[in-house]
Image 1: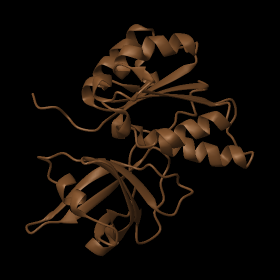
Image 2: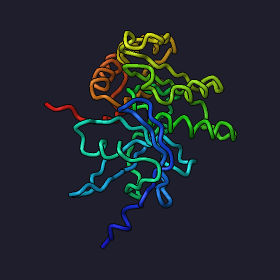
Image 3: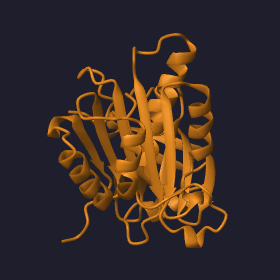
Image 4: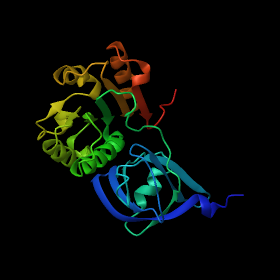
Length: 254
């Protein structure tokens, strides 16, 4: 019989950065060896007065990093995020010892281009891809002819979280393009970048980047509406179902 102690670590928050009242990132010392592949998720938990509440969160950090980095959006009526929102540096939480998930980079199909579509915190697994590939690229271990194209949507620019990091890496390497797009520019007067929802600009950038279904894998992560609409655009554009991957962060009520 497997004991509770064998399933969980006691993790500890080592760093926290707030981007908005409902959006923040944390770094977590998992409390032990934690192995994962870029694109997988960690299951975090907080003990409430009645029970331990757990949820899965995509990992931002690269497997090369010792600490886990997580990008979190507060769900006011959620069971766990209000508890996580209260945690500060030094506070503990549970971390299941085994990472899970299949939203990993498709390196077996032979398709060289990877179109990565996300809303807000849905960029987390893509940052993990990029950090891992960037480390490999600097060590001359880059896996062949691989190119990543990220489109990330948010209501306002301060919700992007990792925009500066992604723009910096994109300026250094030939294999990454990154476009952040704001859907409420009237609430973000200083924004001078792309505007519209992710699904509004997919065709524009797939044309500009000359991405076609024969040599491109599609990925959709974050808001279920973006995933539904984005999937439809890709499938109508000739993408096969098996070349499109999805990671839905929550299921809307019917």
